[in-house]
Length: 280
Image 1: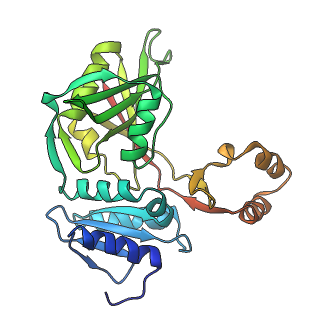
Image 2: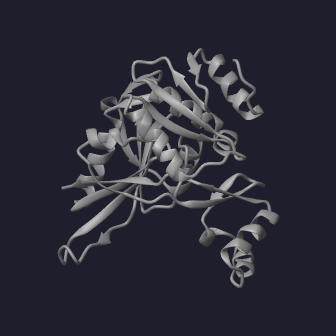
């Protein structure tokens, strides 16, 4: 390989090699895949320096070379290994294909949604009002979760906006037409004025949204997060346990940081989100 890498990166590289995925290494922490789409993976160790601005600049520099770069953090690899490999295979066009037109849509409960998304989505599940699955045969092949209505009275008294909170297909499969079929089902059911969603800038350029008629309306700022080293869950300050939040209140920012590190938390970040809206 030509350079000494951390154990987790070697593990990732071995996993790619075992799947027959061909790549080259750069002088930095990127792997460039030999694929028509030109895809690069930026490997981010928890001990690395850098800032969100550095990461965004790196991504832009690759985009200028017509190359799609994503940021893979060490903790995401350890906690979501199969989902990471599945997402990379999908980006590289290595998935098997299922045809969404052959499926039927059913309403599912939160337990069913959690089980599917924990296995097939990089960010796991979420609690939402509307939960639908696309089923082929007797098997769930894709799931979409939607929020409750959000009144937008500044636009009109009866204007209602909803959010597409999660969408995922089975790891290893691309369900052609599945995304649009689930969207149409939801739209026909609730008749929203618009549908909003976010694309994670660490992993997405938002192409799926753009091809489905969504418009890019804004980009959110990078978010500072705290990684719980006991379970590799990422949390904002406001999502930390109540006992920790109470202990942080009298401390300034520098002392808060020092205290959380002593409690086995590590500061990390993301590069923000791309906000898309489908106007109906």
